[in-house]
Amino acid sequence: MQLKSAAGSRVRTSSDGSLDVMASIGGVRGLIESSLPSVAFLVAFLVTEDLPASLIGSVAVGVAFAVVRLVQKGSLVQSLAGLIGILICAFVAYRSGDARDFYAWGFLINAGYLLAFLVSILVRWPFLGLLFGIVRGEAFEWRKDPVRRRRYALATWILLAVPGLRLLVQIPLYLADDVAGLGTARLVMGIPLYALALWVGWMITRPAVAPPAGPGESAANAESTEPAAEWPRTEGNS
Image (cartoon, rainbow, N blue to C red):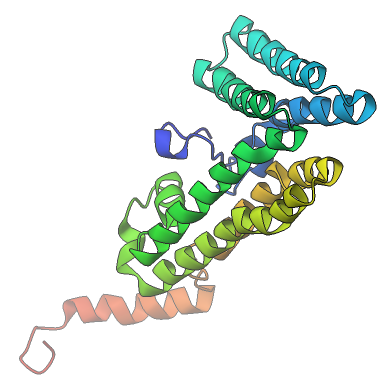
């Protein structure tokens, strides 16, 4: 099932209502398209140590993916969003002449996500409550339930940990001028880590389902309910 709302356009659920993690991250194709430009840059730079050539290779891979999606009449936003990110990373690195600055833009993005998630928790509108509430069709009803509100807050804390861990691990690598370590960490802590946090958040915020009544219980309820409907309404019974 594909969510039509823009707020949840990147979240997909399967026919049984469970979270489809792979579909939510764009499937295998989305994983490759988001990772391969960075892989191309890292491998090219480690082999040649030629920054301009490595940047051109990375941008070329991104352009190729965008062109293919456009030819196949894919989403224009989805086609260009990744390419724009690659172009910004390449521009920053080219201007500074430092290969590690290819990853500097990612620090700002992660800091922005971290701040946004934190604010949503502090104002008691946790981000995953807004997102999953739309996906599950409960809108903002979850805010009336303190237990569900706390669970959505916890889930958002888990999601917040993703950009937090990225910054905690990658900034020291950047300061140490470890391009290989930084590039590897960026790949490992990219979409796979986000997908894991999304899945954990989905699982811990599942609405409680009342257990089905057994045959004996149903019969007992039927026996007690039917006579009660026939009893006259008195002051003592009201």
